[in-house]
Image (cartoon, rainbow, N blue to C red; front, side, top):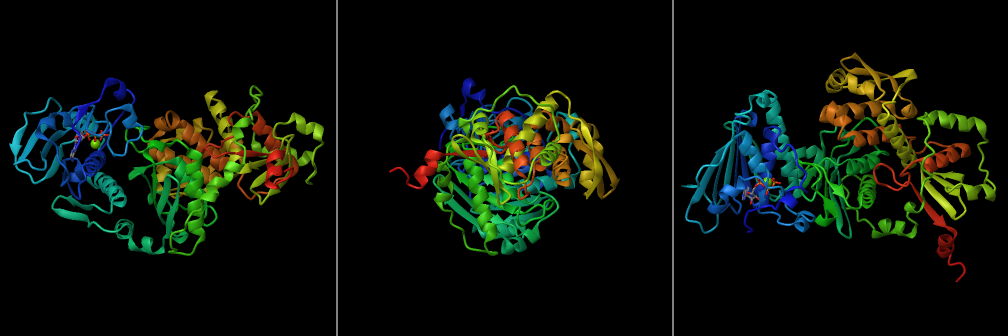
Length: 584
Ligand SMILES: Nc1ncnc2c1ncn2[C@@H]1O[C@H](COP(=O)(O)OP(=O)(O)OP(=O)(O)O)[C@@H](O)[C@H]1O
Ligand SMILES: [Mg+2]
């Protein structure tokens, strides 16, 4: 085992800093992750008073040598990385050397640990100040960390802890996430003198059944696909098992539970054909990828990741999940043909086209633009004269394919556009510009849209009215279970308004208004754009398609949608000639 060392300052400054301990559940998560990193095979979590009074985690892992115990509690000291290169390919759950130090600054922390071959264990304690001396103690091989009286020295923060059942529920969620990721490890959760969960070590299917219920496991589709350096596996809940909330959506990247918009989007899209828009599928999806191809150092709580090739990850997960969902219930693993990914190498990358900047347009309703276009042109496929093509980088629309793709002819050859992705990107940039200029106005809907909501949505609406207004939304609660939307930002008026409103409320609920409007703003705009964009399978007229092409040319970064997927491809005449082996 590597020794614990202080990280050099240059490396410390590279690590995403911020709040590590938010509530007892964060303590549970951090301690479990430490035990897993120490190769524990069996871990017990014991809570008192929802974890606020005490969280104690005991493992049978490798332990900490006595001379390293003070360092374990020191800030920026870790055994898991030593250099920037290590950080860039980190395979352990921990890497900041922060967790125990943060806990020791806001709680009474005690660590007792025994390493292989040591005649007995050693103990150290700290409570908001320098640690005690290291003393002999009794403990089997492994480590017990106890975190007691969270926020004993910061009463203002203690007040923010919720009721015992609420904190306990969060701790149990944190425990279950680890349990889903590591079926090979035996896990026990106690609250007071009760064992509330016990998961023996075993196969993945058994663990998924134990955590998410046997009904879920029996009816779920199995997901298992692999291409070079990337594997996705897990269970996709049957559409009829879908729920009103997103609470049963688990995504793991290299064993780490993450909230990842890109993957969530890929999965939502995969379910789009089989699930009604306001239902949320239940799933447990595990992505394994070469650690150097994913950045885990994005968020202080390590719940977000960034893929180096976001587009490939999105495509791969989307295709694998779509295939699994298209198969029969309980189907055997669906192998993913590498060709599905290799296929897009054939095509030119969209980056070759530079949108003409500086043609800034006022925020306009895209729906209205479609309407104008509809009036101004015939709905037949007329190919514009070649001279005009020369002037328009994306050329002119020839046809729409399966309600999803627009085919256009430009000077170089054929342009293929994913119309939903392209529209999404346009809306996103428009919303961003408008919000920067504080000019997002609500456009009154001719017919207000009412939708069924739950108590949490209604509460979020009441709490965050001001934030919603600043985003151009006019909404009110009609009853404890119904919300009416009277106005939305003009650009979004043609979108799926209930889905939009629900997504917005879910974000506000999860992150709070101030985070949503600052650090999460771009994610929020992406969600808004996604729900506001023209749905796939909507038939467009040729003038509408041309209007879309012209808007793409004016929009920055229009080559990729907000989820990193490409929005269009150029297939040159030379590419086409090659396809047909012409001129050889
Ligand atoms: N249960 C444990 N068993 C063995 N070693 C442990 C255990 N818990 C902590 N350690 C040691 O203490 C060090 C500090 O732990 P801490 O959780 O503070 O930081 P980290 O895991 O390295 O990084 P992070 O802040 O990202 O969690 C670890 O690097 C590890 O060497
Ligand atoms: Mg840790």
